[in-house]
Length: 408
Ligand SMILES: Cc1ncc(COP(=O)(O)O)c(C=O)c1O
Image 1 (cartoon, rainbow, N blue to C red):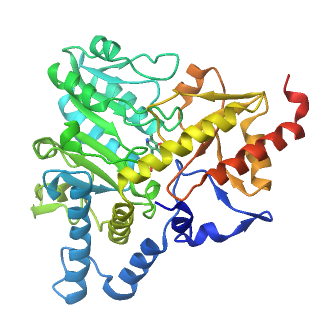
Image 2 (cartoon, rainbow, N blue to C red; image 1 turned 90 degrees about the vertical axis):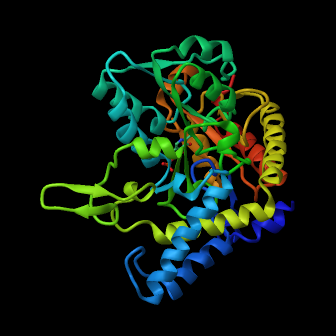
């Protein structure tokens, strides 16, 4: 795997920002798009665009084939047992909300428990707060270890036979922690609960096999894995999706409509009311082809190396505090530099052409747990190199000099 050759495939990465070659290290927020994906979307709009599932004309058939073909590709990519277990959504957030509305509100009762962790993104936290309020269920948290990992003993203790749903991230967008979701799924099932996994930060970076993990629901976003914004996926075991109610009602999702009542299509279409995100699905299919050509294991190995190198370079800078575990982590490094506000760090880095994220990363409870109001985060992808990390480290040293008074 040659990251420099891969970088050449991304037109946006060829520019200068503030007089410097762009170093894009905000991949956990959103990845850039390779030419193959941009071209696939352009080709779709130039050649095949029409609405799906309704036209009897040629373009309608082509668009339907492209859309349903993308579903088949996604099913293979995460090893679902059938394409009908793949629901297209707007992203991870709407996939999780679909389960919170269509499943949790239907099946949870007062006194039932929903178990999550303090490292969840707001997208995998607020929907469960709301579902708990709506049903009378109790929201419980598996405690974190000081290094930002989970202990299976704590999972065993927190998940009880009253727990009906466990919702957990595969990889933390702040700590980088990779959670043992397969083992947690085993515990959840043994106690009679279903498990939803937030795959927003894992699917772009490692091989995912939903059947091997034996998870019930798995959510992810296209835009973090080289696909366009506005397309995401909810994987659900067929029997669970079948038991769920639709959440959006209207065109495309119905079977028969009478004046006072209606019936729904089968899964997954009963969840896809209205004209779906056709070009987004086409882009996602092209992104999957692109990633598979590189190989998910190669991407994971490359990012592991980058994360280790970044941890080493950043930790060597006096005043840098790095958060999260030392290993079993994805390719991102969250840190603070003395008491310089992370927004100031990110602003100085931007003047050097380096894009990082600063803020609470949609994880306010985790920020409180870390005892900080915000952090900086550099997150890597297949096109990043060790020299990008060198540029980051050098710019951090400059930032420190610039704000020198702030560091003891
Ligand atoms: C762990 C995690 N979950 C969920 C999300 C939400 O993804 P989206 O905004 O694409 O719905 C993100 C995005 O940053 C994330 O990092």
